[in-house]
Length: 528
Ligand SMILES: *[C@@H]1O[C@H](CO)[C@@H](O)[C@H](O)[C@H]1NC(C)=O
Ligand SMILES: *[C@@H]1O[C@H](CO)[C@@H](O)[C@H](O)[C@H]1NC(C)=O
Ligand SMILES: *[C@@H]1O[C@H](CO)[C@@H](O)[C@H](O)[C@H]1NC(C)=O
Ligand SMILES: *[C@@H]1O[C@H](CO)[C@@H](O)[C@H](O)[C@H]1NC(C)=O
Ligand SMILES: *[C@@H]1O[C@H](CO)[C@@H](O)[C@H](O)[C@H]1NC(C)=O
Image (cartoon, rainbow, N blue to C red; front, side, top):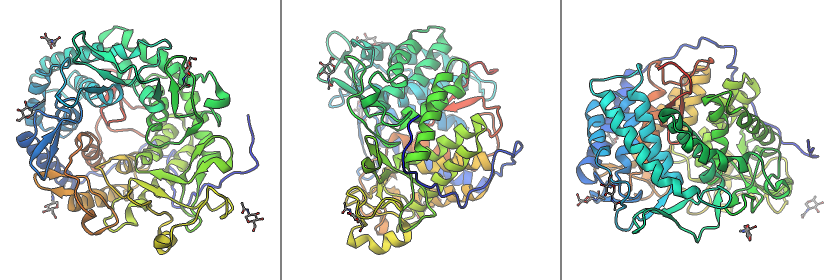
């Protein structure tokens, strides 16, 4: 074990103990649930009328875009939320659509297929719908018939995507072209692939293998994942125990850099390590060991408090080993980290992980409540409280943010104040609430969704905005992302809802695990 001359204190104020509580009681808020359902319906109606069966709604121009190959991304991504909300009309509309998708053809201008995005949104949505429809926890008249249709389409899609893994190492190429004359091919100008785009396939593809009884899907992704779990060139690829680089050479599986964080591009690799263990503790014990190594290193070396707010905890990034290589910047995308570390703490009975996760959740909450709109920015920076203020990687707040930084503990780099209908902060509130039963997290989620409704409502749906720290959120981007349906509205709903089999449990009796797109999958070996 390496040791370092410096450590960063973790601010653990405003944290409560969770693990003792084996019978947490949860509170349901019917009026809040109704509000979230109304937002879902409004978003769906706008999409269905003006964009379906294209991918996404442009709510202001009442038009559509095909940003995910033209297979109806918003519909497929919405299905598990519609199921959880009991919205049978929308479920039926989506199943009727899934039946007709021709995955071997892509919309004009949307020819490039991302293995990662297609896996988490389309394959994830279909696998989750299959699991719900075949589960006794949620059945309706035609559920078995619908499930069969959806499974067939999930297999069609996975078979087409499988070409991605046909590389010398087995590390997939992310970008594919599906509609060539000879069927799908890889974009062979790509020589590397990213940590998250390699490491966020294994749950979906393993689940598909377990459902179908055909191991080939699991095997493809597990071969690729092995290069991430057992780093071949750790002197480059693993600057801290368990914390790895960002890009991998597809020809030999070596890491090509030493930079990383729990941010976009690397994030859900770490997320899936503990989720695989939750999915099957026997098959994925090594994934758990790697998650523990990553979280232990994160607590020791990446946890950072801003100089103006030592009570807050953020997570730094790195450009290699050592304190001079830390990067005091994080992202909305990274705010899933608190929730994931809480989940791991529950699964492993580690109160220290739960407490660290809750501290991170509190930091991300601060990025919401400090802005003009009450919504957090895409990217935020801070000055670390422990590192010398004249260190080259520890710059102070820019002058126009001095007062803001003094109060808030972060500033927003120029142009990075967008909010793109992302879920991660509310997602982490959800895990914090499920772990503790502390209703303040429900209140935080309620405040967030109300502010989002107020600020992002646009035309016939909801839109990304340019500046969370400006009145009205700056201007609207005229785009309603599919994960708005899959994630933001699902977590906003579940945190206010009654207990249910698919809710995350603080005890050791989870029967569902959520993919990174918030699609719940049945855990291996649990009763139907
Ligand atoms: C998108 O919608 C337009 C207008 O309804 C329709 O003509 C077109 O076929 C759709 N394209 C796809 C890929 O769904
Ligand atoms: C695409 O798949 C459909 C079945 O979903 C099949 O009928 C069709 O022939 C295929 N088209 C091409 C170009 O392979
Ligand atoms: C990837 O590995 C191959 C084979 O070892 C090597 O020729 C190539 O330069 C490497 N590419 C990168 C980007 O490191
Ligand atoms: C930072 O400030 C300290 C104390 O004033 C000084 O000793 C050190 O040389 C400075 N370092 C840099 C990189 O300027
Ligand atoms: C969302 O905000 C709008 C604008 O303030 C408001 O009219 C609407 O009632 C809100 N939505 C719901 C579901 O209450």
